[in-house]
View 1 (cartoon, one colour):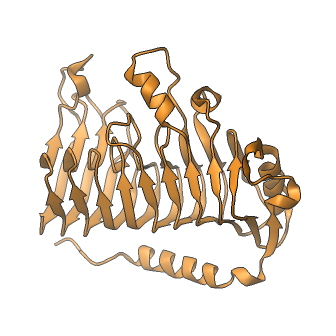
View 2 (cartoon, helix red, strand yellow):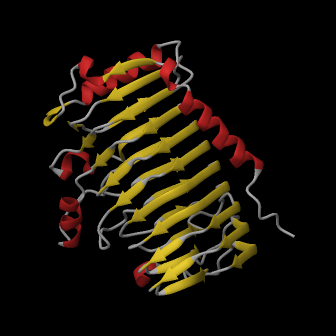
Length: 336
């Protein structure tokens, strides 16, 4: 019988982050204003933020990059790892604002990206990606860029995102890719119900990820779970509007890692297109879904509460029309 208690890795991960929060008073602080950032929402502060990161990254001490109240205009930024500092905390009391012209970010993959980092935290603040103008472009079927993910972590460890507000992403709001030991808690995500491809939190090729006490309103998946996701715990998450929580889509490729040991607990769905969904394309694949627990979910005005779709093909365009190779087993629905 499947063990329905919270796994030990989740408990240890939460304790680790609680201890880290309580020790921030001893950290070396880098204020972005001291590097030339302007909190007026008009002056480009990209260089100042990158300089603050460079200084914190090079320090042998645990550090805080502090963002005071105000609005900070930022272009696309990549925060690279290989840091000497064992812990870097972004403490944000202000709002980070994307350029008004969607084309500035639209051709970038990400707006704010972290790659190869260890022990990075983002605490508080708001990210305003100014997505509606790009959504309008796409709705008009004009020649538009794909758009940028607001916040991404790639090949990183020991990450926490807490009490963050993400507004109007051009594409996905938060992406966790190739990461280990990630804690997302108290995050609010807001985008219009008709905004395209604005997934709330996407997890793939990652293990030991917790998503707890979050509110997600989007035009696409509330949480999407991609190939190679292991030991994912989702609890007390409210979704809607949007497409609900999805495992997949899977079988995009022939060789694909499986999804296993997933728990979705105490979730609420309000007016979503779907509730709890597993979806795969109808083509051969080495992928699989195994050991998934959907428990204690409340659904209000949900079109499709429970979905397992192995013939996924949105809009019925260029469908593979084969047989899905994704093997699905050991799935529990309880208290829905």
